[in-house]
Amino acid sequence: MADVKAESRFTKKDFRGVFWRSFTLLGSMNFERMEALGFLYAIMPLLRKIYKDKPEKLKEAMHRHMAAFNMTVAPSPFVMGISTAMEESVNDDPDFDPASINAIKVSLMGPLSGIGDTFFWGIFRILACALAIGFAQEGNVLAPFILLLVFNVPNFVTRWITLKLGYEKGSALLTDMMATGKMQLFTHCAGIIGAMSIGCMIAMWVSISCPLQFTISGSEIIIQDYLDQIMPKLLPIAFTMGIFACVKKKWKVTYIIAGIVIVGFILGILGVVAM
Image 1 (tube, rainbow, N blue to C red):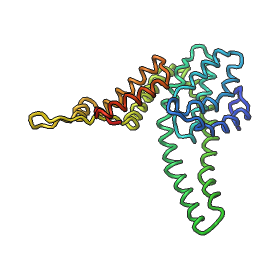
Image 2: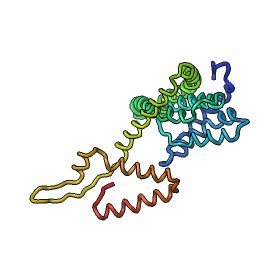
Image 3: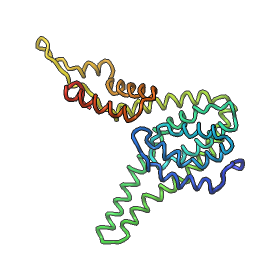
Image 4: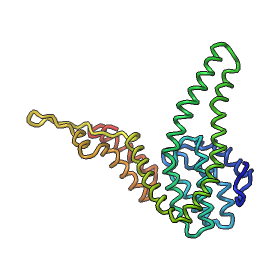
């Protein structure tokens, strides 16, 4: 990769490796950590190079990047680049806060996913399919190649450029923020944005409601209406925080999933909640 910063400990071959590994981001997608394992796999060679003489630090970095991560895959190398730059800062500066790495990752997930979804799923995919269908209707054998090229050329270019941009500009940004003392403020703000993003995902993805209703003195009482008056999406957030508490207590994920299935089934049969 051209023009990587001069003081970088990485070679062009290292960055090409991350570029190709980024295509495995969804290879181990799961509902516990989402794309985290693919993310760690992509940057693992760089982490080994950063912490080559510090196995304990490498282990800590690996644990950091196994935290849940999920975003549109095309711009994800930008986050890989800036995460690598921050890992270098952790290794080189004992005062650098490692917790800021995941705070930055979470804060970038929402905005970059919004941009990535708009362009890659909303524009490039539709354009590629429309062009390919036009060729296919005419019996042109180039139709599938048109589809692949129109969608994947922007995909490849975006991955390549954003990886370099994230590493170079991320390093420069971090150096400036450390020098001016803005790093703590930025990390705090990133944490707030990350919490807001998680709240939005809970509201969109966790669907739980209470179908209970009663008639008292001729008036119909709908429990869900009262819950919404207290706080919209109260049951989804309460459910999510309960699962989070179980995870913090280090309960096994299989036990948590089994508990969700059993409790959900019983409450559903009794008509207490609808999931």
